[in-house]
Image 1 (cartoon, rainbow, N blue to C red):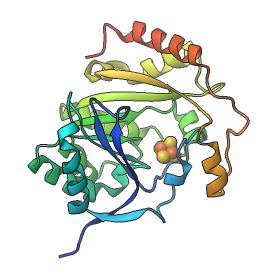
Image 2 (cartoon, protein in one colour; image 1 turned 90 degrees about the horizontal axis):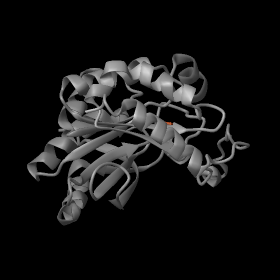
Image 3 (tube, rainbow, N blue to C red; image 1 turned 45 degrees about the vertical axis):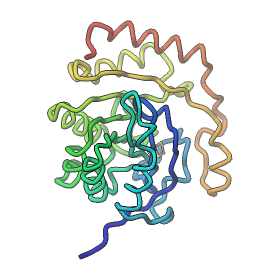
Length: 246
Ligand code: SF4
């Protein structure tokens, strides 16, 4: 039988930002998007990373199981984890045997073929980036369309998954209350199925990764988003959706 392997960029052992509780985060190598604000451009190319089998990753996750308190577990992130969906579906099945819960942290870039659906079926939770509030800005700043993103969200809603949404706020691109209103309009009734919608600040900490990887940085002249601006927009969003979200 063919041995299933995945290309992994890196692991993070006590991750606290990628889902509830303490988590073991696995960053898959390769991503079809080219977000202008990507904080991890070294995860973008599919050529690279280190190959692991399902059993090798499960063995790592099992070692961390005692720390998965407060709803913790494994988070599959990237790069784009669903670009290696067959591996993910197999990994989730094995993690379930060990009673370890699994979140998929995705940009929703992948079309919903049967393998991607199987990977989504196997997760306990979806963490989905809603990167831009309209098709034009998706095409311009992300390098893909909104259709797969919304289809991923709709599928997770239909399957009754726990859902968190995230949006990176970038100065002069989506850092306004008008843009927040546009996200809310875009999501509409879907917000009723969302547990949490978090805004994240564009920062410049990953800029040296562009230099190291020899990749042009489209936002090299953009400053990090101010903390106060982020909390103002998060409050605006929270107030606007407080009676809507799950
Ligand atoms: S989806 Fe994530 S990894 Fe891919 S280009 Fe965008 S920010 Fe980078």
